[in-house]
Length: 165
Image (cartoon, rainbow, N blue to C red; front, side, top):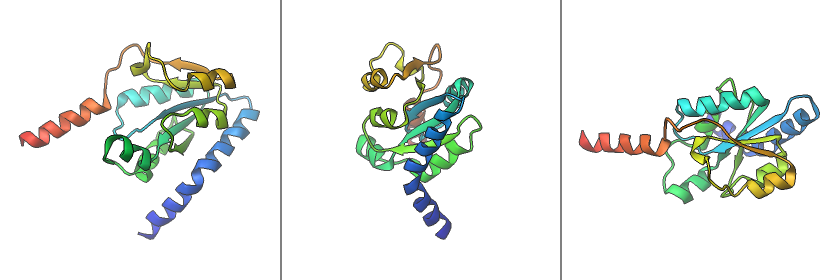
């Protein structure tokens, strides 16, 4: 229990310390790449996204807080601390930051990444962060040809499997 409490205390400070790391890297030659999401169910499509981001520069993953997830979907499948732990264990991810807002515009304003990258489910779609990307000079990119995996579909499949058993 004490380890988990310590992790939660560190998590509260993580929002600012990781952004500061991003600022230091901005001064270096590596470009900052930001991608965001809930990441409650990680699948190969996410790893491909992170790998692509890493090919562009230093990767910061913005992760939605438990408060946001609970308000949006009504349930938290995997607590924030565990989602962060999982993301930080991926070799393509350099930093993880937490945000509570509906979209990542404020995060983009604070970090000022060179690239803001989303997965193929955003092909041809307007995103609320586009205006902030323009204001900060951030290049918005969508990676991937087609979406192979869908977290919501995987969750629905799992719920159906549980009901049928």
